[in-house]
Structure formats: structure tokens, C-alpha cells
Image 1 (cartoon, rainbow, N blue to C red):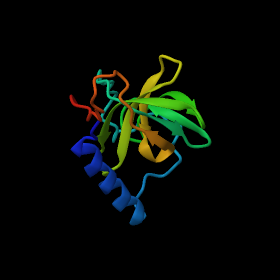
Image 2 (image 1 turned 180 degrees about the horizontal axis):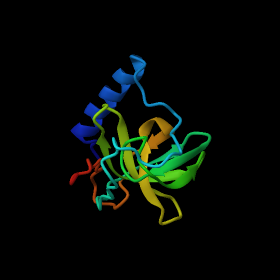
Image 3 (image 1 turned 60 degrees about the vertical axis):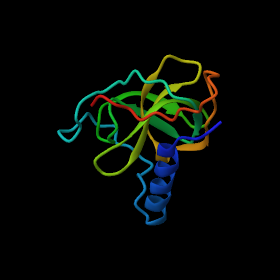
Image 4 (image 1 turned 90 degrees about the vertical axis):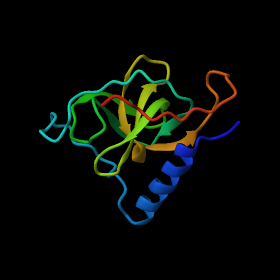
Length: 135
């Protein structure tokens, strides 16, 4: 099985940002969406892999910015399934996820996820790390 080029590139960018101290803040505001939020966006992509949420309670967002509307929550230790990813205009990586064992979906900052595991969820022999398209 092979990891996608996009995943390798994205991992390098995230590592560089974190090393430089430019990572996403772990807390997210509970306020309603501000004017800088481009509106809700719910992709239909379905990639492979999952992650475990860091300790705490995290807001699922309607789009990949911390000031976008909260549409649900996910707790530390819960698994989220990666559907696709995108990077916002600040260069922060976000995943569009489904919370394991539920139908809850939303955007979560990659900074709030630990223990990423890329697996061939659909058994097609390819690990697909999908970028979200459409916004």
C-alpha cells in the first residue's frame, strides 16, 4: 500500500508550522460564526484513516475555521474517521470527520487530533488521503 504524495507533503508542512510555533490553538471559541467564516460546507468525500481526539471536549465546526459555527462536539479519546482534509487561508490543516459509532460529521482542527492512523478502510488496496474539493 502507498501513502499519497499529498499526505507526505501535508505532513511536512504541518511539522514545519509546529516547529516554528505556528500551530493551531487547541481551544476553539464557542461563539456564533463571525464574518470571517465563509459559511457551512459539508463535503461528500470519503477517504481512509482515522484519529483519536486529544483530551478535552472539542467543537465540530460547519467549516474549517475556528470562528465558524459549532455544529456538535467530540470528546477526548473518541475516534474520528477521516473523510477529507483542507487547509484554511491561515495555513491550518482541518479534517472533515465522522465521529466513530455515530452519524455526527463536521470539521475539526488537526491540532486536536492525536494518534493518526491511515488504513485502507474500503479494502481497495490504496490508502486514499483525500483533499476536500468544492468550496
